[in-house]
Image (cartoon, rainbow, N blue to C red; front, side, top):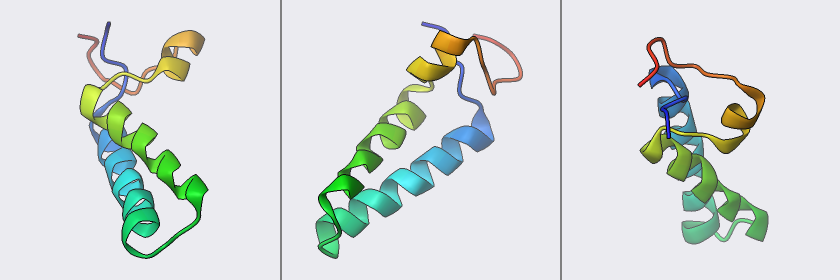
Length: 63
């Protein structure tokens, strides 16, 4: 599995993921806000399945 999520992309995914999960868990947000787990996971792993499917990458150097 090659890394296809670059630095800035990972940071944005983590921020959005934490925001959505926090909204759902701490502030009683809607159930769909739990979707924030997905960007958190892809930020942590550094690999995004849709990016791989379409041959897209935000990494400067493939690993």
